[in-house]
Image 1 (cartoon, rainbow, N blue to C red):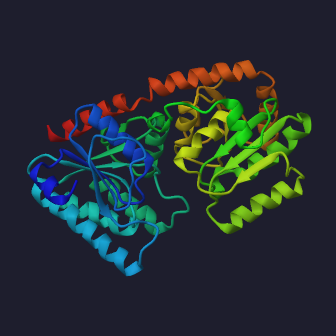
Image 2: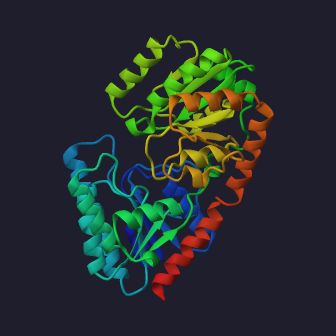
Length: 389
């Protein structure tokens, strides 16, 4: 969809993700479309379609990787100009701009305030209340975004309470709409568990734990490795798979040093790289349990990825894990966030593989019901309509 087409038949809502074209944004727009919303997704110029979609991708934002800095800067200002053009045409027609992820947080925070002053209806999804490793100015800019938005979406009651505590505002301004599943990414035919394990160098009798996703300090990989050292000493069949790109080279080096120091080289598989969509299935199908050893978090989409693949999770008691993981039914929540407590729970959980399978089936049922994108699309559409009333 190009700008001229958009001008001829403007959508009632634009979802905006100028960072990379996040999976969440793609799935939300699919749910909105299925719920009857005329929606478009503003995304990066090189964003591809990882699954079939029926709504337009509006490729305005510059790519994050590749290209010259000068070229991307011009593209970025072009993206801002196009949003302004949309706002100028749409402010009297009831259209909504729903922001997800920013490319330049310190620019777009001001830009949202500007668009609000133009009379456009603004919705903002608070995936994080403040950015990870935020400076003081980031908190101030976040406050500006929250003041400028007509409505703020969060994914749990925990996050809503934390947001209202950190940035006082009317309770009715904050709307709890769950994060949806990742069923869009499930292949038509799932790889068999035996084949998935063979691809990763694992055997059928192994008890496999999975740590998946972008690796950052706050995600607690060091805590998991300490726990795995203790658990592996009790169960020789335990294996740990770590799959995801480290945030820094230093973090990758320190993680590998911990593995080497503990003498776990053959029992830990570390794929320190971005995992392509077509390869995700083999990791989750091969796993018995997904590990979430985070030190702090508001909400994690990895829970929903695990649910989509019918896998239970084991998580520290931080953020909204106790709200999204039903302890003993779809996963486990630690009573104490320590390596000793995590190790004990790992050893206890893998002793009962049928219980893990039962929990996985329940997790999959939650994915298809409570966390379906159609239902989330209906809730989000109702929010948009309330802003036009």
